Length: 151
Image (cartoon, rainbow, N blue to C red; front, side, top):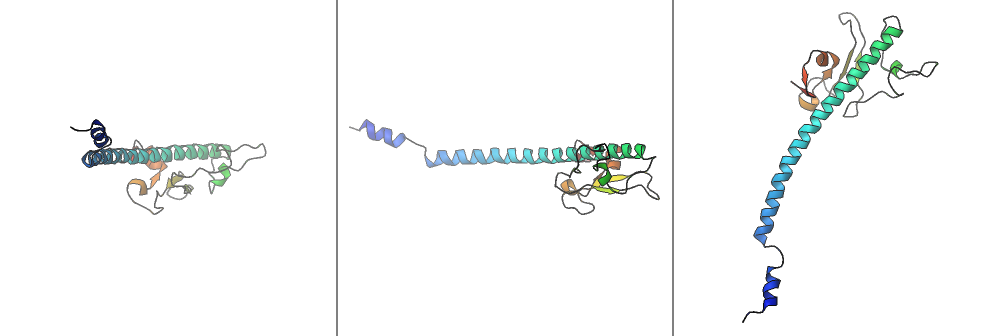
């Protein structure tokens, strides 16, 4: 006759096969979740770039209106308080792109009547794709970006 206690001891816990099935399922779920999180994070970063560049461009336009149509030579005057403590951008620090790099600025000049505000992307090199792609205010204005990602 079998002892009911020894039977209960053998059934307490998971078998190796059950543990392997659980690990495989968790691995598959993690793969799906990580892929979606990375894609959404990339879209969010592109959205931040677009919002920052639009904000800087608006501040540059305000600066030009206040200075007889002249744009600054750098972005610093946008965060430098005037005698009344007013700045063209909120705060006294220029925003940075999602990769913690400074936004680049080319003032108007010969052949370029409007200022260019841009980021060189994560790699800080001209060109690139995905997170490494350059994004500027002209691309945003021309609708070359879709939902935070480059078309």
